[in-house]
Image 1 (cartoon, rainbow, N blue to C red):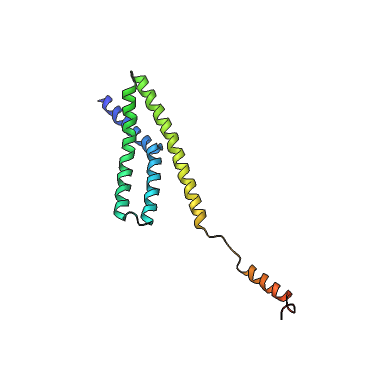
Image 2: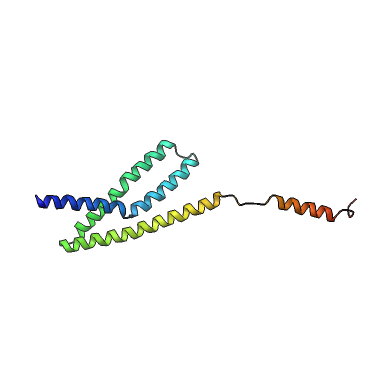
Length: 142
């Protein structure tokens, strides 16, 4: 009975960690949703297509990633220690790729926000310059 509780606790910890650690699947998901959002704004896909793709990617990519981690660990490792080592290595590499993907996404969003902001212009300054120029030129032009 104690063994069963340990399995449940280990599975729970694994699920918690799998939500905390960024994965390559997260990076792919963010990139795809950005692409699909642009297509939706350009009217090349419908809202239904966007949300269907979004849901499939959201609920499909992470399980595929974790299944590949488990599969690689089981397939490549000869004993328990090797399987754990391979799993940790794949997770660590994946987390690195996931973090890079998230950072790239944040930078792209910041750049888009900067582009959307209109530069502040002082509309009065050109008018003042024109009035000054006009005042200086009185008498030069008929």
